[in-house]
Image (cartoon, rainbow, N blue to C red; front, side, top):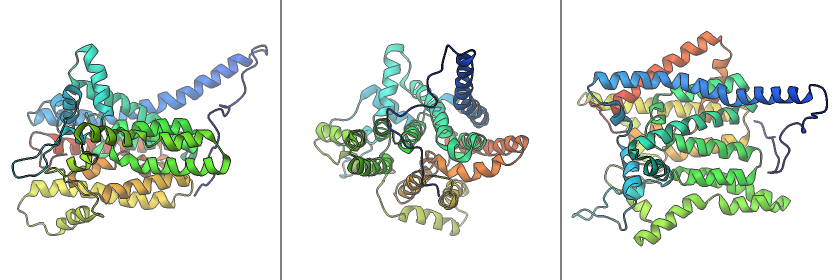
Length: 411
């Protein structure tokens, strides 16, 4: 496993020195090299992402129409609708309970960054918050694709990193990269936080970690890693930027918890809201995940639709576990990247709640695709394109099965 990463500070030099414009052709050569590097860093990942994900969305749209559904409604349903409600109405001022004393589903369960961006777009333009959310997520997906490539190319190579982007764009749960869910926004924030952390750009890493903490609770694994490494650096090297990162990185997650505490009078308001009917999310050491997987073996034929839905999610979960094994064995990847992936995947699988959500919960951990991207990249381009296209077709069908009018399990 790689232990040496590119280490620098916020003032570290960015490549070669300024070009000597007095030398003949020097500036032109530097400009050409910069243009080529920018094209490789931006255009390549964006083009690959759009091409692969277009297959997913295209099949999804066709399938939704074939089922008599509405494409835009499907993209803005379920959690996407909750985020739009937050954008339109804000959060509750107090906890809400049903007559039997059970906590009810509330908007405070949904973190604020996505609805804040939806509101930022919707208010001046008059756009519906649902559609604003989809726009935010599309842009976030592109930012995430560029970030994934930027993180992986130094360890896998340019071609394999592009393949990793394509696989992430085509994966079975990838339809959520086009819905008003927070997965893509969280992936983008996490990828760029990791990119900065690997280069020891503490302030940048902390800033993106704050954004991740305002997206999802699973940012706690990223917060922990950034704070631990920054604290070690601050103590060892007396680096004031690292010390600032220790203080700044948790502020997104902690800030939202404090905000809800002041607003509702309960500083555990979010944790209470997560226990509402259907969500029922809490750390259970993987009991609910194991029970769902074990239940597949006891299928009695009573509900084939629900069985197939559980089997599809189970297949993604098993893939994630297998992929995690290969990630740990891949000695090209830096230990920071491996540690973040392992802890985050385990955190997602060991937390209870709706089993149908487990597949999309793994979506932000793009490193899971790294070993497979390397294998794919060794093949001919035509074989890579064919393989990604097949995966994308599965991804489009997967999304339509869960989100179509005849869905068997809520996402």
